[in-house]
Length: 485
Image 1: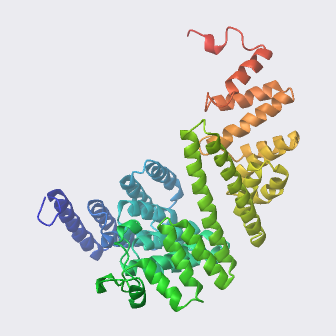
Image 2 (image 1 turned 30 degrees about the vertical axis):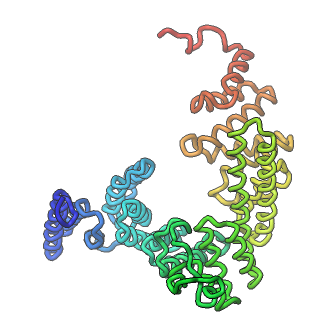
Image 3 (image 1 turned 90 degrees about the horizontal axis):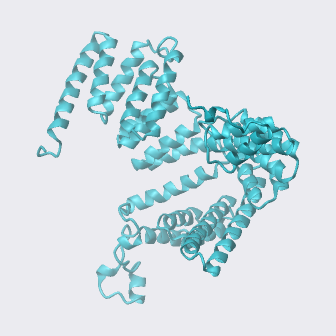
């Protein structure tokens, strides 16, 4: 290892990258774009975190294609195989390979928003945050209304502690999706991050990592008997107390309560967070604050339920632990139904919210209430396939078999075994059961065979298929499974 902490191998790579960069710039001067692209391409492989190399490569790629905004002629013939490489690398969490695959795609079309976003994701995971920022910003230049890309860029800004740009980016998301409560909450949280960052508390993992809190100021130190001046806490020495001071200074400013609540959330002090949100709600009457308070209250019940499940599993004979788990599950479901019902009224066009509420009604065995919500949610193409499956389940509960069959068949048109294995199997299973009930054994057999081709142990399918084939006279000897060849 060299004295500056860089290995000889790394030093060699960076020197080679610098040499390639020099050759590339010389080629640029001669407008030899092909060679410049080649040399910059080598440079970024040797030094993937070098922003200037990436920017220079993208610039000459655009020059190569005469700034046509579409890249290589008939690029669509080449990009699908590259997108498959990106997908495979992402699935394996091989970020270096994903980086290289994204660059391969950008060599075909340097304006492609998705390849730029793929590069941003890979570089973020590799810790190359400057390059990730550049890649996501380029992606958004070419897809300015892509909410997922905007949120991803905001995340990179946050990682770099560039909170102002993170907030500005998320505000663009709100303009595109005014009903996105999660993003609104995140914007509020970024304000708290700024306070914590300025106070130097980012390194503390929890409140135990912060020294025993001195008194807030002279008045508190005298009242509480501080013996030394060092015990008096100055501004900037405690994130919590800085936030409390801000509230004391401006008690009518709701932002102070929200920042304090977010701080408590990060510390895992959910009850204190709920209390701070309640104070903010009392001050403002803002329904957005109410929603944040409700979210934390729901999270508290979820955590309690998790603990109750663990206790019940560790003590299976403990009737009290078992009942506690049942009671908390019921409490959570009732609370979610109440909250989601109120929000569904407030945001009538939010189809994801309707779907969430419908799922809770299904859990509560209230299919009649879930059906109209699911029918509305099916208009969202992103939700449609799973929503149709759920509609089929609701109609089954209502004993409306023809309607259930129709929904399952519509769902199968939009499901693939590779991308949606569970709903795909569920649909075939219930269509098989419905066909059995209708005495259409051949159709039932077809559906069960589809499932067994994917999952031989799924439910009771193998037993049902054996029974059906016996009734159809196909279970005797001489079948393919009995062949010795």
